[in-house]
Image (cartoon, rainbow, N blue to C red; front, side, top):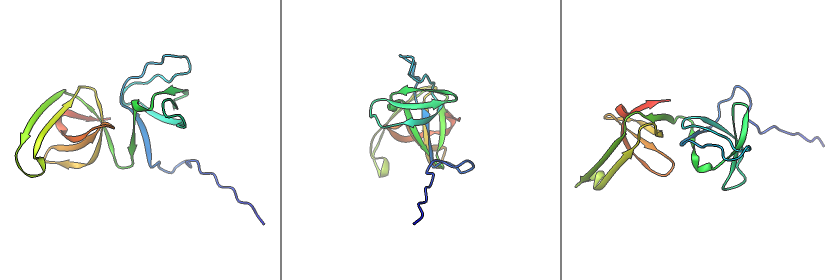
Length: 140
C-alpha cells in the first residue's frame, strides 16, 4: 500500500481566496508584537489563540489583537476614506425605512462588497455594513 502525502499550503502562482488588511494602527507593546498601520497586508502565521494572533509583514513576525485586522475575500476591494462624513437621515418608505446613520473618519479602512450603484458602494469595517459615497473613497 502506498502512502501519498499532499501539501495543503498555498502553491506559488495560485491566487489565495482571501487575505487580511489592518484596519487600525497597532503599536507594538512588547518586542514580540507586530507593529502595523491601517492598510498594511498581514499574513497570518497562527490564529489558534482568540485574543492574540501571530502574523507577518515583510520579514517581521509578531503578535497582535485580531480585531485590528479584517479578512478581504476574493473579488472584494479595499478603500481608504479620504474625507470624513457624518450623516443622519430618516427615511419613510421602501428598503430604507427607519433611521440611517453613516459615520466614517478620514483614513479609515473599509472593504467594498459588490458593485457601485448610483455613486454608492456597500462597505464594511468588520462590525458595520452600509452604503457609502464612492467620491469619499480611494482604493488602496
